[in-house]
Structures are given as structure tokens and as C-alpha cells.
Amino acid sequence: MYNILMIDDDWLTTEKLSQLLWHAGLNMSHIFSAHTFAQGLDYIREYEIDLLITDIEVAGLNGIDYMQQIKMIKPSIEIIVVSANNTFENAQTAIRLGVKNYLIKPLHQEQFLDSVREVLLHLNITRPAIEKVSVPQCNHFQMKRHTMQNHLKLNQLLAPQPHLPSDDSLYQSLGLYGPYYAMLKIRYQPLTSRQIDLTLEDQHLLNYAVMNIAVEIVHDQWNSITFETDDCEINIIIQWDEASYNQGWNDKIRQLNQLGQLLHTHIDQYLHIPNVIGISQILKGYSFIKQLNVQANRAVLWHTKYPDHYVFYYGNIHWKSDELEEHQSKNPYNLIVSQVKEYIEKYYGQKGLTIHDVAKKNHVSPNYLSYLFKKDTGFNLWEYVIKLRMEESRNLLLQTDLRRYEVAEKVGYESPEHFSKIFKKYYGISPSEFKQLQA
Image (cartoon, rainbow, N blue to C red; front, side, top):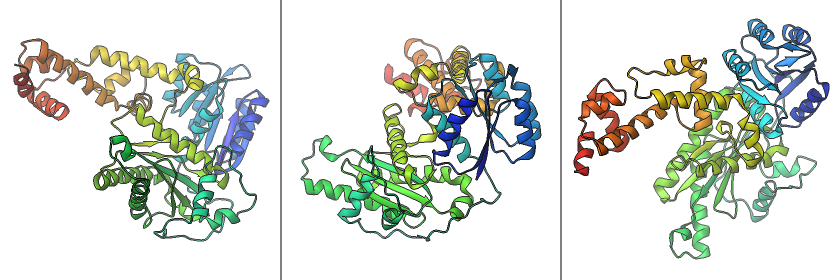
């Protein structure tokens, strides 16, 4: 269980955020509040604080020096900055200190909770939880459909305004013991949209086929509940008890992503049906099953932005809904990524260019720059360099009479052979073959 410390001289802000966190399904032990940096340092020294949420300026003092002290006292602590101060210099300095996110006031609640959840999901806490919950072990999911009654109940839990029972009996009757849950949502393309005339019974059989593939893959290794909706969707709720969650749990997001990739591949291979997998975060408590569904739905929708990708984890996504657009446009991290893109677009043809060069010119660490760039653009940073180089080399081959080695040199490759290898991997044919096709 986690200990969180909030430092802000606005007591109303700390009170509101505390209440928000307590009702967010997080595995928390204590939330401490300090109204000065000095008080915050006392908490850091006295308690095992896992996450610090702090303003950049408290009681007229700039928090950069205090954050450096905090990192010296406890290097493993994670930090999220919540501030009305959105200067680029502060954001750069915060990044150098390893701050995980820099959120601008006024806060959007969902963005704040997503940021906190994502930080906590990747913490590796080895000390025992204060409370132990004893729940039945469910090692295998029986390969059979839920009764119609259970099917309706499971779908009712995902409704926009679900009626949540006050006791545990309904959840346990459905096999939901928890207390930790994640959801994988499979959304596939109905065959009728591909001009194939199917009866309603055929469509039900298709839905059943998708569900059975999901059950075959999941049930041996995961404590899970699999059920269908009426919209060409299959939902898989993965659950963990306290003991299994705390045992190597920091690797669970990677495992869920691997599971999503496996589901997509098998459905595509054996049923030849286009499908997308959305994966939620891991939340604690029955009452957050609806939130898992919301997150998995939003993850699936990310396919419309990146149609060449089919598995999406909600925690990796930067949302740009109308509600968050203005908020995110003020985010200094977005300014860093924009500057990096401008730099790469100007110098991608420079020989010997490296990620370290790009990071140094923009005053951030290579690892953190790669993380920010991927999260904001969907591309790995070096993939973006290659993309620009390949597009320019294609234009040069189409529009000029330059030789292969000349094209390679113009787009930043010292070796014509290496350029040809990258070009063939990117376009499927060599530069000379491409040139011949245009003749």
C-alpha cells in the first residue's frame, strides 16, 4: 500500500485532491498534507513516502531546490508537479529531476487521476500491505457461457449509471472476488460491414467464436471472467487477490500488453476478422469496474488515430478531447516535444545524428525524451528520424537523378549499403528497384 504526500499552501486544494484520491480505487495507506516545503521535508524524513504531489511554488518559495533535497533524502520517490506556473524553464528543470508529470492548474480530475494511477502502477513496493484480504482462489475459468441472467448482470455493471449492490454477494456470484481488476476489451469488425450476408444466428456464432478464442488463451494463466456484449465486443475482466497482486505485480502491465497482442494475433489469424484490443489500468474495488470499461473503450478508440496499431494500453495514451485540448496545450512537456520535432525536422539529414545529440540540445535526458516523444506522438524518436529520412530519400529518387550514395549522403547515411538496407526494410524494395519502377 502506498503513502502519498501533498505539498501546497492552498489547504482547499489539498483537501479536494485527498478526497479525490481516496475515492479513486488506489491501493493507499496514508495521504499526508503539508503547507510548506519544510513540513514536507519532515514527512519525507519520518515516513516512507512513495509519491509526492507538489506545487512548484509554495508560500512564496520556489520548490526546485526542495525537490532536489527530497531526491537526495529518498532517490526512489516519484514526483508529480501540480502548478499554475507553466514556465518552460521550470518544466525543463523538473524533468531533469525526474518529475513524472507536470500538470497545470486548474486541474482536470480525470487527467490528474490517470497520472497518479500510472505512477503507482509502476512503483515496486516490497514492504507488506497493512491489511490482508482473504478471498477464494480461482485458478481456472470454466469454458462455458454465462447464463443469460449473469450475462445481463455483468453488462449492467458496465452501464453509464450502474446500480451497485451494497453487499458482495452479487459480485461473488459472478465470480468477481478481486480486489484488483483490469479489463481487456476486444472490439471486432462485424462481417456484415464487409458485404457478407449473415443471418442473426451466424453473427451470434461469430461472437461465440471470438469469445472462445479469448477463453482458450486467457483461462489457463489468468483468473478471469469473459463475457460478450451486443456490440461485437468481448470483455475480459482480469482479477488478482492481495497475495497474487503483490507478488511481482510491477510486471503486470507488460504481461497485459503481451496478452492483448496474443489475442489480436489469434483472432486475426484463425477467424480473419479485423480487431482492436483496449487495455485498462489496474484499479482496486468493485465500484471501479465501470471505470475499467470506460478506460478500455477509450483505448480502443485510439485505433482511429493510429490505424496501423491494434493493441492500446490506456495508461500510455495522451487524451486530446475537447475538454482537455486547452489544458494540454499549456503543458510544458508538449512544448518540449514540439521543440524536439522542429530540431529533428531541421537536422535529420545530419550525419552521425544520435538521440543523445537531440536530448542534449533540448536539455533533457535521452531516456526521458524518448518516453515523452513516444507518449505525445505515438512514434519512437528514432523511428521518427527514419520516417523523415525515408520520405526525403523517396522524393529525391523520384524527382532527381542523384545516385544511391548521393541520396544516402543527403539524408544522413555515411554508408550507401546501410541506407539501402533501411530503405528496403521501410518500403519493401531496394532504392535501385524503386528507381527502375519509376522509369
